[in-house]
Amino acid sequence: GPMTGKFIDEALPPHIAAKWASIWHGAVETEQAQRSIGRVEIDGKQFYVFEKFCAPLGLDGAPPTMIIVATFFHPISDSKDGTRNAISAHLLNELDGAATPDT
Image (cartoon, rainbow, N blue to C red):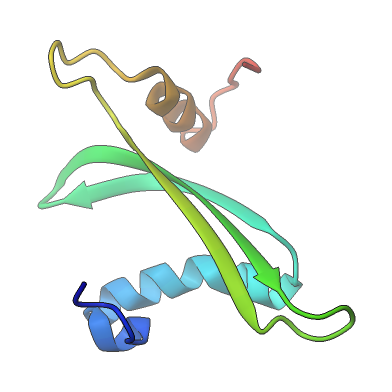
């Protein structure tokens, strides 16, 4: 695609590149895996919630040289009837600080 072979700041507008990179910085700085969740907003509307896992990788005792990232996007509502997707509901509750039951 259009991002292949490019650095994030070459492929995306500065404000989006900064948002994306901020998620990875914690994993690099702490040299520990990080999980984050958030809402995806497009034109002022929220259609998805994301869950991202970032893990720094490197040789034993050496600083990380790369990051492995897995991101899952969950629709906020099921398209047919508008009911809230169960995974999204759980993540949105977590984002809003509500207690969520273990599943």
